[in-house]
Image (cartoon, rainbow, N blue to C red; front, top):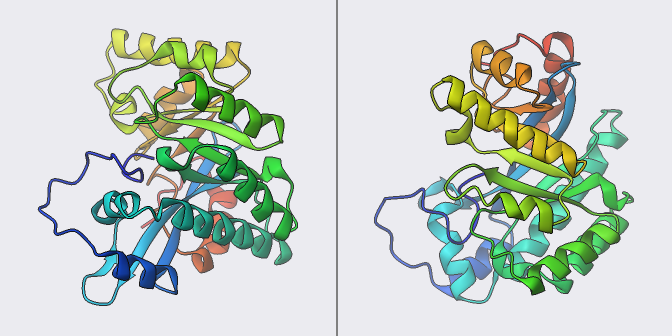
Length: 274
């Protein structure tokens, strides 16, 4: 989902750089994950959740990732933050399952600067230590990722190890259709602005084309930003497999997920959460 990578352009607020000492302190107990449900368009059942990092800052309160991820990368702390995300997300998935909840998988946003063998090893260690299988974890590649040969090789190694790979925010900015041919994606996520464009015949044709391309590589498609029944019905008719958006649930804490999943399971095709 847009806004989680070190190059995200979403925040226009002026900001002061965070010192490395503050960021290291955050790693010791101030970081949080919130979760956003993904729902199967046909069955209405939860197909997975995306995890998103937040910082419970002692003075600024709960902060979105955008204001601090640039500084995390600048201070060389991205691998440490990525490792924390992987461990926390996989432990949370394992805990939900221990409590009897059906949750097919969990996804995390892979910061571009971390993509490589170390990320693969950290991800595999996290799923192993949590008692999960590699396919339970999906790594989302951000739009600012540079899909150069070295990166593509790393992605192929990750997928060969059993990890799932997703292309996030496809259609926001440069479409880069060739990425779908060159990179080993399991999931293609259609970006919010892509989904929320006016429902003209041209826009619908573009979404349908993206879905068709994804299917040729065996990937499932996820429409982000689904907030209304009309949008859900539109993208479902265009062949999208999974929806994600406030129609079903807002971004919530791990403790709130079981109740949200139960509610979606009861009325997943129509429910709008408060």
